[in-house]
Image 1: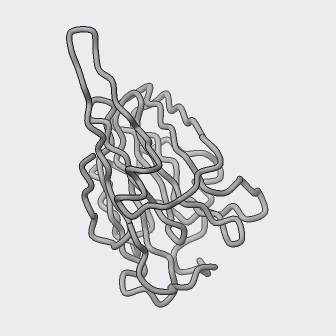
Image 2: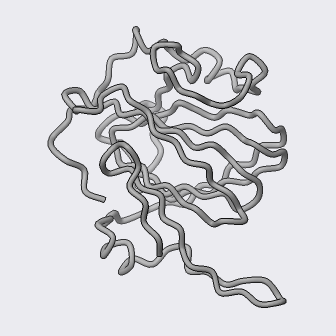
Length: 191
């Protein structure tokens, strides 16, 4: 498995090897031993599946507050997305900074997002399916969102965000200025 550290420590892109022939391919998308060797000892408890019909759909920027904070392992099983994270750990040297990676069904790339980050993605193709593992269960009381296109975050979506397809929740998310992070930085995130 190829492991690429992004600009924010602890956020990594993992690309499993694919073994292909004229029938298609086989890949091991997740192997606990391989992930532990890569520094990710997360125990996942739930798999989620998100389908977006339209190109230009944005889902994010989401988080779950402690004690329901979630680490995520995200990949595209059809289509392509620009996956974006923002560090929201107060006191972190990278607080407020974003990192991104393109995830494609063809390449099999996955992004590991530790707790303490906003997370979202933009679909780059219609009919995109995303699957992701999480290490904590969903809690509606802990669920939150920050405006994906807030200029203070400076996220380069590479897309005309005024045309983005949004849920009501994402369209009404709080601004970065009004956001009060529930996360504190406690040292380096290993990944």
